[in-house]
Image 1 (tube, rainbow, N blue to C red):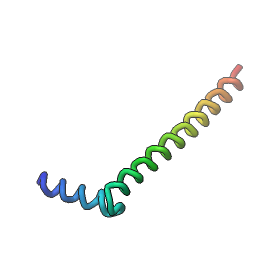
Image 2: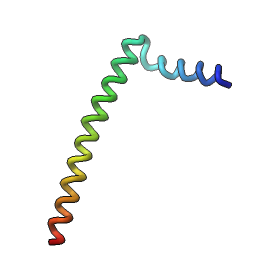
Image 3: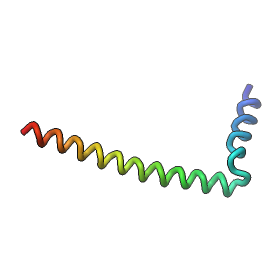
Image 4: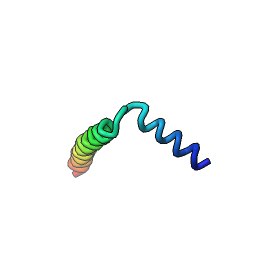
Length: 57
């Protein structure tokens, strides 16, 4: 079972990226996108909370 999971993971990992550099680049791009989108979501949530608490006063 462990062998099957390892084989499946390896095939899945390298199916989109042919090389280790490709894997690293894709991971880096995903991390940068995640950081950017998280910051946007945080700011939008903070703004919405501020707006709601401001209206209650």
